[in-house]
Structure formats: C-alpha cells, structure tokens
Amino acid sequence: MSIFNWISKPFVLLDKRQKVGIILDYFLLFIALFITQFYLNQELPSKTTLFIFPLIKILILMFFSVHRSIWKFFSIRDFTTLLKALTLVNVLLYIGSGLFFDQKELLKVTFNLLIDLNILVGARLFFRLKFSYYNKRETTPAILIGAGQAGEQILRELIGSPKGSQYQIAGIFDDNIKYISRTIHGISILGSTHDIPNFIKNSNIKMAIIAIPSASSSEKRRILKICEEANLEIKTLPGTDELLSDKVSISLLRNVTPEDLLERALINISHENIISQHKDKTILVTGAGGSIGSELCRQILSLKPKRLVILDSSEFFLYSIEKKLKSEFPGVDLIPVIGDVRNIEKVNLTIETYKPEIIYHAAAYKHVPIMEAYPVEAIQTNVQGTINMANAAEKYGVPNFVLISTDKAVNPTNVMGATKRMAEIFCQYKNLSSTTRYKCVRFGNVLGSNGSVVPLFKEQIKNGGPITVTHPEITRYFMTIPEACQLVLQTNSMSEDGDIFVLDMGSPVKIVDLAKNLIKLSGLEVDKDIKIEYTGLRPGEKLYEELLADKESTIQTKHPRVRAAIARKPSDETIDKIFNLLNSSHSLSVPDIKNKIKEVVSEYTFE
Image (cartoon, rainbow, N blue to C red; front, side):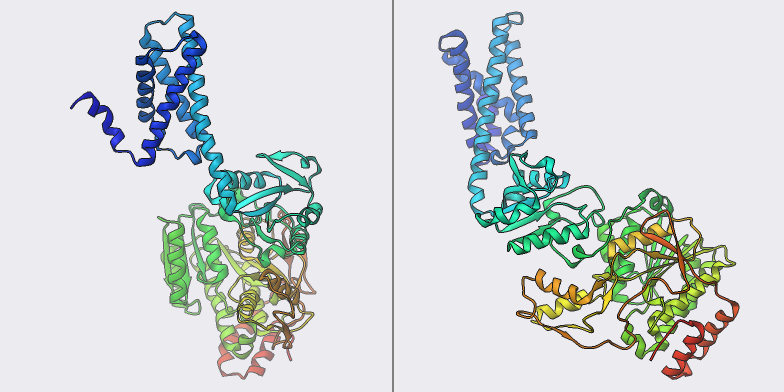
C-alpha cells in the first residue's frame, strides 16, 4: 500500500460534510501559516512548508476526530479537543525542526498556534452564529420569568441546545431588584414581573416561561394572572416538591396545571431520615395499583429498599403498576401479589412469606356516593381489610404499620368516612399493647387521583361542558399525589408519640374556583365557552371537610407540615361493637347498618 493510499484511506471513509470541513481547515491552516511567516519573517514561506505543514496538522486533527463534531453546535468540549490537537502538532513540528533552543523559532511556533486556533475557532463560531440566526426565524418569541439558578439553566439550554431552538428569549424578568439591568448569557434582565404588561404592549411576545420552582402558590397565582392578562401562553417548571433532583431541563417545561394553583406551603423533606427507614428493608404496599399506592411504590423504590411487595385485588392495576415500576426501576426486587385484603388467609400467607418490615396499607374503597349505596362493601374492605392486615402485622412481627386515612374520617357524614374512622380506631387499639407500631396518616383530596374531581372536569371540558359542581360553596383540602406520599413516608420515620398524624393541607379550595381555573387553563372562557352547573350535594357529602374532630387536639411534630392528633383512646367495648357490626352487617338493612356505625363512631351523623 502506498503512502498516499495510507494517508487518504481515512479521508475516503468520511462523509461529504466531514470532507468539506477537512478541506476548509486545510486552507485555513494554509492561510494561518502564511500570516505567521510573513508577519515574523517579512518574507513568504517556501512552497514545501506552505503545503506540507498544513497537511501534517490535518492528519493530527483527524487523529483527534476533530472533524466528527458538527460546526453549528461547536462547544467548549470541541474547543478543548481542538486546542489539544493544535498544541501537539505545533510542538511536534518545533521538535522536528531541531531548533530546540532557538527563541525565534519558539516564538514562531507559539504565534502560529495562536493564529491556527483563532482562525479555526472563528470559522466554527461563524457557522454556529449563522445557524442560530437562521434558526431564530422559526422560533416563538418569549420572555423568561426567574433569574435564579433554574432560570440560568433553562436559558443556557435554550441558547445552546437544539431542543431550545423553538424559543427566542427577548428578555428576563425577576422581582429581585439586584438583578435588574444585568444580563445572563447576553440576555438582559428588563425589570420585575410588574413590568411585564408594559413590555408586552409593544412587542410580538407570545409566551412566558416561568422558571421559579421555589415560588409559593400565591406568588405563582400572581405571576400567572399577570401573564394571562397579557394574553401570553405559559410554560412552567414543576415545583420543588415535584423535582426529586436539582437538575433542571427544557424537557421539564409543561403547561400550567391546577396543582400549581393550590394554596400550600413548600415541602421540606428530611431525606436522610426517610432513606434510613426504608433502605435495604422489605416493604409491603396494599392497594399498590391505586393513585396513592402507585406513587408510594415509586418513591419507596427510589429509596433503594431490599424488596418491595405490591398487593392489589385488581389484576389490571397490578399488571400496569408492575410494568411501569420495572421500566422505571430496572433490576429491583419487585414482588406482585394479587389478592384481597378481606381474605385473611391470603393476607397471612403474604406477610408470612415475605416478612415485610414496613406495611403501607392504602387499599380501601373511597367513593363516597357509591359507599352510601353499598355500606356492607365499605365495612368489609375498609374495616375488615384493615383488621386483617393489622392483626397479621402483629402476628408475624412487622415493626411498622401505616394506615392511609382521610379527612372524611373526622366527624363523618358518610359511610366511607365512618368506616375509615373505625379502621383508625382499631389501629389505635392495637397500639395500646402490640410491639408493632401503628400509625394513621390523615389527609384530604389529592389532585390527579382516580377519585379526584379534576379528571372528571377535564373530561367535561373535552366534551364541551357543562362542568357539574354540587354546590357553589363546597370546599375541599387538596394536595398533589407526590407531596402527599412524601409526607406519608416522612411520617413513618417520626419517633413522636401519637396514633394519628395529620398532614397540613394548606387552605381549603372552593371546587367552583378549581373548575374555573381548569376552564381558563384550557384556553376557554367561563360561561361563554364552558358553563358551570350546580347539581346539589350528593348523599353523605359535606360542604366543608375537617382534619380534626372536635374532641381531638394536636401537637406539633419535628416536621412543620405534620401534626400528631391526640385522639381519645378506644375501649374494649368499642372494639366489641366493631366486631358485632362486621358479623351482622350482611343481614342488616342500610338504615340499620348506619345506626350500628353510630354506636361505634359517636360523631358520625347521617340523614
């Protein structure tokens, strides 16, 4: 094989654009050498030097794969590779010249290196700037709200990534006065969020990107209102309670959701305590296919348990959650168990076989109107199912048992809430004498859950309306599924005394306001595009939910979002009444069942 073929073979294997890049670099290096010789020696270099030296440099650049990079995406890493290659080739040429101690020759090599670098980098930056310029013609003009760390990361990606080419940032707005009139990556911080309307008036801005994950709900609502009034489309980053890592990316930008508008404080989770309580442990979650159960599973797996046992009575739900978890957490020891918590033999077999150290009992019937019509099912699942799980936990020495309860257990006006209160009572009773630690975690509605009003409202909007609300004054406490589950896990790591833990749900939200926000977030107008109709309270439904019963008080725990309820201790007589109800419920009428429930849960009221 000739020397020419040996040299030209790598060139032949390159694609057309890479070949053009090499040829262009050769001529640029030719020009750089010409400039160096003429500037320093005031004479033209020899023809051999002019042609051979650039060729040697090209071969070294090819060895470093410099020409595999795409010029329009030229980066710091590409610059570093180019610098290494040019430094090496100029040092080799200096050594090859044999003039090691000739200061004039050293100056020439150093000067030539600088000229090479400037010309080659300049050419690549020209292509990158040209690409950015033409690419901007198809971008959406936007403003960025937030000049903090998240804003900087988003802006950096918008400028330097192909993913960001769809947006052209015209300016940044931030309420921190010290940032105003400064720049980030060449983009000016024009003012506070209050200045947005004036800026938008005389511009073609169509979108606002909100990059303030730590903003409170009230602050978010204020900024959203400003953007809505300016007729801006809005993209936002998830809140810090949803960001399980500090990494911020364009891919995380999403449309505004009802969760962004909840009146609640930010979560401050003690990850160290949670990790230590769950890492390398065997954990069982019942109702694992439900909205709360499935999110609990995801968060538990992120804590690296030894094994996670997921139990559900629905074959489809169990299959779905198993598939999702294995996809998200490959290689985990995940044990799916199909079974009903009402089946004591199945419950005992499961706990005896896998020996969990923590049980999260989320399996329950939760739909208020349906449970009003079928109280026996509510009793058998919510009460008998909890008794089965709680007794098995004690029988097989499970150290920790956590019951997922509800605010509807407080002064209940429906069968569902009353049965959950009975489940709490039984767990409290077990706590009086058992070595197993029983905890009940009580919280309100979670947005996005299977029983939430949000999916219903979205479906009604999709169908053109109307949205149905039971009463104009009805209010509910709301929390996102991720933050509710984070606080449940936090509760298990607490050492405070108490049987029932109450999560801080923030301020109650009017359901009609939630409906109106959903209509607006869909780009529609209330009453004009989508009407709201009031249908009247359903059986067992309250206007207002409560988190504490009248006879209960709370003490603050170490976590600001969790309080421990000091509830009255259940008596043996109360437990006997629960078992009498379980044994007789199948033969009783609905009114008789409600009267029997009243004997156990004195605060229960019904029509």
